[in-house]
Image (cartoon, rainbow, N blue to C red; front, side):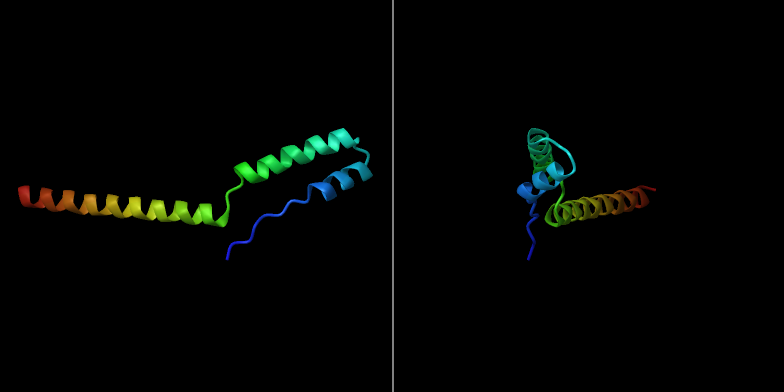
Length: 76
C-alpha cells in the first residue's frame, strides 16, 4: 500500500510566521512548496514504473543484439 504525501500548509505557515515571515510571505511559500511536492516529486510508484519500462527496453535491446550476432555468425 502506497502512503500519500501529506503536507500541512497550515502548520507550515504558522511556523514561518513564528520566525518572522509575514502571513502573505508564508502563504506564498507554502503554495509554491505544495505545488513542487505535488507536481515534481517522484513517488515510489513512479520509480517502479520507470524501472519496469527500462527493464523491458533493456530486454528488447538484448534480444536484438543476440539476433544480430546470430545473423552475423551465419553470414560469416
